[in-house]
Amino acid sequence: MQVQIPDDSDFVSFRDQCLGTEGWVSHYSKRGATVWCREEGEENRGVQKIKMRIVCKDVDAETLYDVLHDTSYRSKWDTNMIDTYDIAKLTANADVGYYSWRCPVPLKNRDFVTMRSWLPLGNDYLIINYSVKHPQHPPKKGYIRAVSLLTGYLIQPTGATCSTLYYLTQVDPRGSLPKWAVNRVSQFVAPKAMRKIYKAALKYPEWKMRHGPNLKPWRFPEQNVLPSISVSELRQQRVDSLENIDESGVSEEKVPHSDDEET
Image 1: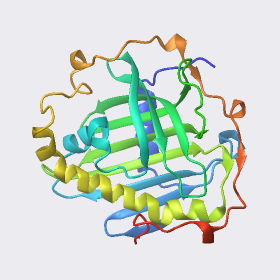
Image 2: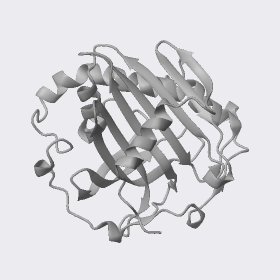
Image 3: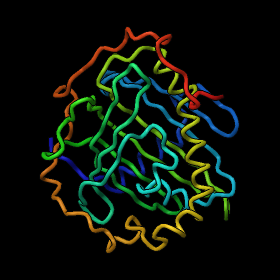
Image 4: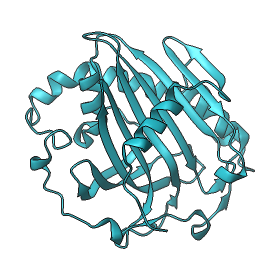
């Protein structure tokens, strides 16, 4: 299926989902972070959506936007990341990138190739992505190629130096995960990840002053040195063309607990 770069209506639809309440069930709410889940029907492949929100005091919306874009800073806060890199640019506000994600042992690690788009919309900032198929980046040995059906961030300013961050994701992990793994994400991993972004944003201005303070290609397209690619070279990543692993029988007793699991 032909890949399409999101337009303004796609960003508005994503923002509406982040702010909407219908069908969402709260799974966690503590210390400024909230997590909701929503079951999706077969038309959406039955893949659950997860939505998170965190109130960020003393962090303005622009700083959060920069943190989420700056791949060179990501290793400072994303402890689940194995690797990430940009592959090519499509337009001034769209590119293709790779991301690999560390899953709890003994579950297999996942990776993604996604098309990412971003847009300031009024006073809000939005970043959204979905999985694509790139001819030079096929599935890697040792990873399960997962599929982002829709993933992204909404950042809303709530004052001169405060903001609210939303994260919404619908990912097909290409495998039958055990129920405890799904619960762990909503109860522990997700809120901890949001707090890490918040803490990273507090430290980002000082870090950026020492690491290319004027280099922000997501704001200044003329700084983007990635090779260009035509959208016609990409295809939507079909779920049924990828390996499907049944990990539903993996026992939680075999999984070591990490510092990500704090309430």
